Image (cartoon, rainbow, N blue to C red):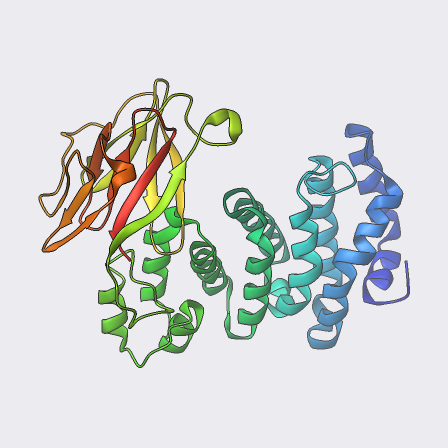
Length: 332
């Protein structure tokens, strides 16, 4: 390893670190010493080097914790040559130097938390995990402690399309200072905090386009056949219970989340939710595919002869007899 703060810390604790690696390799023979050394050099050393300039007294403790977390993740193939999750190493290498101050306070919590967060973003938002890493890096100077960092991560994941984080993200926004809340949402207006929180009640209102003129339209097609990566084994049907949308096929039921940023399905189980299915009176669609919300109407011929529909205050979900997709209509 090249000379530097991490190399010095490892040299000071050489006997201890070698023993830890030997113990891990005894349990996980596939551990590759050369690759582990490369990981330390490429993904751990840059953050430790930054730390040596701002909090040198924490270098040895942080190096010790990051060494341990690295061994744990590599043993589980979350890091290393056999990993299917390159986003984790990328987050360590790119983000950690920018949050070295935070890392110095609780390196194990930060390293584990970032690894888990970027893994979830990669699973639910696809290749957009790089956008999450970049956005977290840009926000880093304003994230004073772990709690704020965690909340910012949830908000940015929501903005990248993880619609199931919406409620958690809005709760997090309520506790943040105005400049951080507005900055994380990229709000382009002179709104007040109370105005922002009121506007966010509508899931299809986009903070980046607050003045956009909106009309009833087909906002999104979601779902798909399980054999092609979707959730459904048979054409699904939809219901609404207690203000939440659900989709179900012959085997399972999912909660459907959707808003201006994206959509996601979360498995509910094999049974339908308890409660009486409901449709709000302000959202209707007839068999010709003409949808009505309040005083607005729009025609959607592809949705004619639907199999089922369900609605919340803001969203109409429609399924078709021969399709594995669900079509969402909203004021966008």
